[in-house]
Length: 253
Image 1 (spheres, rainbow, N blue to C red):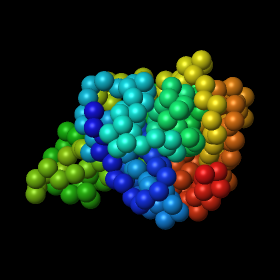
Image 2 (cartoon, helix red, strand yellow):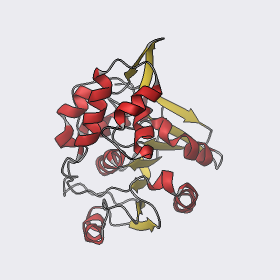
Image 3 (spheres, helix red, strand yellow):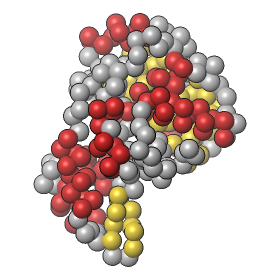
Image 4 (cartoon, rainbow, N blue to C red):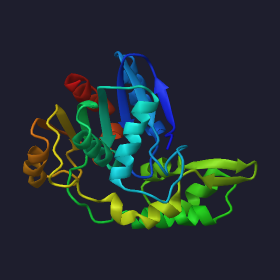
């Protein structure tokens, strides 16, 4: 599978993987900042997301292999790999399976543990969008408001809309495959998968994705892991505190 990406700048290859229902474009502002610091930033759309191909297959093993295939297609080696949420799970497994490919690993607000499905309301909202006959983003937002009150989350989700024709908007992502595989999104990283390279976990202090309980299991699978929480930030820590996030990641790199 040939993943779609936006490549910015020249220098050391730095791959960024978005979270569930996102796309590489979510990282454009930070990606541009990193590119100005001597990195060639690859903002990748994972399978079934953004402009990347659709497939009924969906697992972290498959998505880790997608990253390896992407590196082969672009002749990349010793990459810096960063992933947020679902992208963090992909990045963790990729680093553990292919340690010779990944020089440094950055995981954003996700732990290697299992998370029960918790996106049901968002998926209901996206299903309503998918079934509606929408001609404007304003109408799409009004419909989505019935399911999701948080404006920031709605704006994030509305990025998935593209114009099918002058009078009709449709979803870019493969909603049916994502709904069918919702149990797999929260899959744990197998306990025997270990990455011994330099690793940074960055989490939002107000997010419950990484708590004190997760610190010991993280260290078992990522012995060189440094875990840095950011104040006044939740799960979208990179979007909520971009300056602090940029500083922490830059220092690690």
